[in-house]
Amino acid sequence: MSILKPTARAERITDISIRDLNKLSVRVILLDVDNTVVSYKDKAPIEGCLEWINEAIEAGFELFIVSNNQSRERVRLIAEKFSLPFEYLALKPLPKGFIRAFKRTKCYREECIVIGDQIFTDILGANLAGMKSVLLTPIEEETGFSFKVRRKLEKGLRKKYAEKVPDISE
Ligand SMILES: [Mg+2]
Image (cartoon, rainbow, N blue to C red; front, side):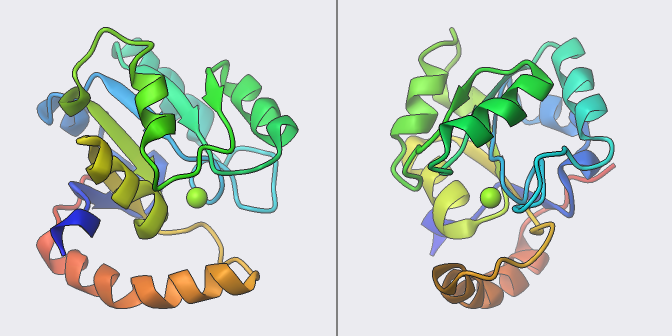
């Protein structure tokens, strides 16, 4: 199912080669929050994340946070640490959060890349929006029932994509 297929993959956001994002003709980066820039329980960014984001900004990328998290406060606090604009309660895989962020730029959809840890929200949403995507390995496993179901469904796909999708790590 190509609608679920990411453009590239990496273990952590901090492993992504910014030079390779340039090669993909990307100018806008749309970041997931939970299990992407922070662990899903935490408010502190993962090690090296702030530096990675600053490096991307210095390289000329525009960055936005697009989170499904329902807590405006949680997403705002995290976005503030990076000084990035944000969308919360984005309802991914519906593409509207990605599209709202992209409309704040002067770029084309194909120049946007979504970075996230979930196939059925981040990657599916990116494909529905006509954007590129990088699938990450979640930082830690969630405990909620719906997460467990989704992670189980993802398992086979991740295995397949490990062979078919290029690794974009440095
Ligand atoms: Mg996530």
